[in-house]
Amino acid sequence: MLENIRDAVRKFLTGSTPYEKAVDEFIKELQKSLISSDVNVKLVFSLTAKIKERLNKEKPPSVLERKEWFISIVYDELSKLFGGDKEPNVNPTKLPFIIMLVGVQGSGKTTTAGKLAYFYKRRGYKVGLVAADVYRPAAYDQLLQLGNQIGVPVYGEPNNQNAIEIAKKGVDTFVKNKMDIIIVDTAGRHGYGEETKLLEEMKEIYEALKPDDVILVIDASIGQKAYDLASRFHQASPIGSIIITKMDGTAKGGGALSAVAATGATIKFIGTGEKIDELEIFNAKRYVSRILGMGDIESILEKVKGLEEYEKIQKKMEDVMEGKGKLTLRDVYAQIMALRKMGPLSKVLQHIPGLGVMLPTPSEDQLKLGEEKIRRWIAALNSMTYKELENPSIIDKSRMRRIAEGSGLEVEDVRELLEWYNNMNKLLKMVKRRRGSIDKLFGGKIG
Image (cartoon, rainbow, N blue to C red; front, side):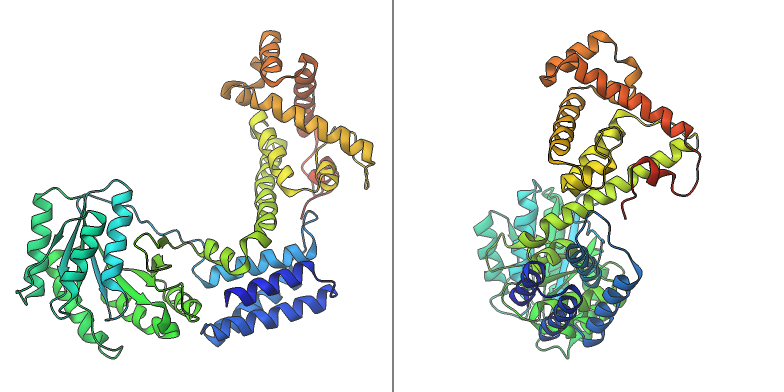
């Protein structure tokens, strides 16, 4: 899936095919790649329908080319498909923190227990592992080997067949030893038809331990079947999250991720390889960036981020025009930095008042002049203290000299910035609140 979609993104952004035709071709390739990766067909067509709907309803911002804007929409909608903006909380909410791992046999649960222990150990926590899988003969030995590899103690009783008793003793032992995080590896089941037994045992151990988190480990290769397994787990356990393993070598990884996301369960981690450190905190947007090819969309996402930050400043200006507070130099700094992310300069400069380049197509000399002025302003702002940025009225001649010396500028450069800032605040107070006021102030609205 990954390589096909990345190729489609590169072809779309660099190709000479007319825009409308290129969009249709890209959407078809996206559908084909997602379906071949076992993502539910209905989900795929719902995704592409939302993309088309946004294309018809929304207008591209002036700072983005149409193709860039389209890819940003694809990125946004794909992120929603795989879980959206939900950020998993992987930090323990209390100490000691007890984690119980459950999963079907073959899902990589015991290996994941070791990876999880290593993840938290690297974060400075004292971690203990409990081997409570009494059905698989090699489970204790495997966990012990992993524990020795990463320097984490393992509690187990190879001759005891009472999983609940082992789990309870292991947790009690590590609590006495003042471990911060205790990870309990429980037994899996053969085949995906025995989830009921799995969940029953999970409930029994849960009642005995009262763990702080019960994590279901799912093999990415089960694809859409993950929906049913995650749904049952999510309904059966009052506390629950998901780790999806083997995301490195399966074509069905997208199917498993989208299926779990559809249940509303929290995907905390994904296993991206066999090595002990190949466990990542799951982030839908980062995963989608990888799908689309980070190198191809990084600059687009930077522009979109700049646009979002700029719109926040616009809202602040509207408040100032309504008599709510005033614009600070910190706001000015944020505005300039947001605009720089949105380049190119020929478009950026048209949105900064007072630079003398408010023409539809500034000349090369005007662009150079504006670029130099922006550079000087940023240098001056970087040399100011927090108090000066928040309250520029305190900047007297001695402060101007200090700011100029610290930024390698002339005092006149600092004075010019302050004059522009004062004039801008006066202008904002004079402008009546009406539709189009900000457009006129900034020489054309973005978006």
